[in-house]
Image (cartoon, rainbow, N blue to C red; front, side):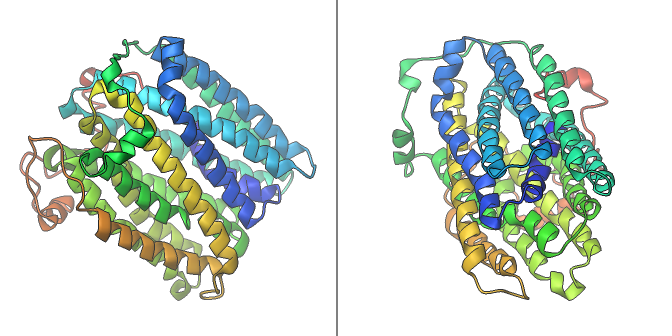
Length: 436
């Protein structure tokens, strides 16, 4: 719930505080960059604490505490408000990035490879439901409070987000700790990691994912700016658009997870990678529908479905491709590359938004076109560079996958009817402590 509020309402909060388009770029990009470089110290920090569970508990308390001063920024009025917001978000994202790396390495030690797709698909649904509640609740609060005291709306939603994070900290402390294996031969620097591009299948995957992230974040941070500032949608319409995307991702997780367990995560990453360039096309087609909010609500499920599959299978691919001894370090380097890509993409997008000629009357529409072309180029250049690491997979064509996706001819071993909440009726098999 905390992430649903912060991830989807920090940009509207920045706009409320008077941030410019370029400042919104900094709000998205700089925290990601700093949090990414913090990954270089993740392994050492975990070893210094001596326990991954203790490490998670300490950082989660600090992260929750940061949301309190963020919430009170809505009540004050001074020249450096946006700068303070960016500063707080740098610390917030840095702590979140370290938490994600430590948590991912710990939980992947719990799970056998054949259960990861099923478990993470189930967990992603639970996380999605929680995020959906946060997005919907925050949107309603902001919509209602806008007529009376808009600042109080942001104060309430970020204060509630902090309360949710404190609650999740209590749950994190109940996780079963496992020793983190370490041998000197598993230590390698980030430069050594990148230099292994020609030999390492995993490094090729990381570059593929990073370049897609860069191309996406040319425009992704500015969709909220476009909706709220340029099109003047209210908070209720904005919330409806976000809910449509999150709900679609929620439904997609078991579908992608089960297909990945059969056909491999690499196959799913390449299929979703081919669909990602299509997403900006829907934004470019909006003038045909007179920028109607209903059109955005109807188009966003496609984006949520595709990105749900890409993010889920990227996580599972990392756990398959990396041995437990190297997992914290490789997760850190993956996060570093992703954060740098977000930083570069968001800053480049902010610059281009001020220098591109308007398309259909809006410079940001030109940004969508550039992002679309960049995503397509990345797919055609990098998609074939990496391969599946698991051996017990079924070779399928894209045509077979799409027939299975729509239930026409499911892949061998998959049921025709999908259970969109797998694991709930078999909870004994999946009794794991999750992050949230």
